[in-house]
Length: 339
Image (tube, rainbow, N blue to C red; front, side, top):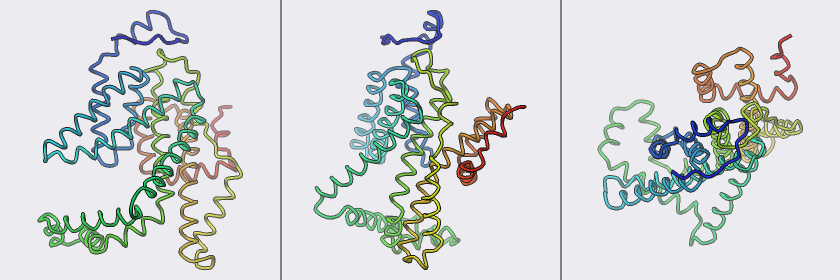
């Protein structure tokens, strides 16, 4: 295996040989395979860029792109030739986006950028690219994208309603069955309600996926630090802080959302809700930095620390965001200093 020459910081020649000896081509294939599997496992898709980001840092751009491209082309070929594997085409498209995200995160280290600055910059670039793609697709399309999407949803709903599984679920009854039946009876109405929150949802998804990937890469710096002269680490990344003036926008969003009956009805509620969701994810990042410092202060490390972090991200994100917001006034970190 040919490895590009890198600048090493604080490592001897023996350490260099030890690290490079662990990088077998089989492990690269395994990392790409894990990423592809995560693309097909519902909510776990948010973790799928992480293995590829690590692969880019440990194996370089050429080898990682090559293996990822082979996986994408192979899955597309199977989806076309084998009717039972038609869903692989969807996962292939997701894998393309995941590869791009993993590449962007890895370039933060390769370019030697501060992790917070690199993460914010890539989030803004991603949102701009998505906006341009949607605008271009709207211009090229013969009808608005919303109309095309609504037609596809109606066709999908009609196809699902004709299946035996759907009929059996409806016959069994229950809350889930009623919700499914309500959606299937009028999917367009539900979809139009979704349009009201599309901006904040895309904003949250883009920044959260980038933050989670960057956080994990910084957390596992020991795996790639011998290959890159990178002076920053997790402690630098978790010092993310939202500027103090942003709290005024939170107040405005909260006022519009709560007082929508007096300030414009549904429009004010939607605008206020989008502001709160978009800014909420930024305060979540600030709160997670406080939480990581708290675990360090309590001397919780290893597997327990990883489990607590994952559980907090999925089950305590509201409290983390609130802690990040109140950190604007309280400065929780001052209580973590040992006297």
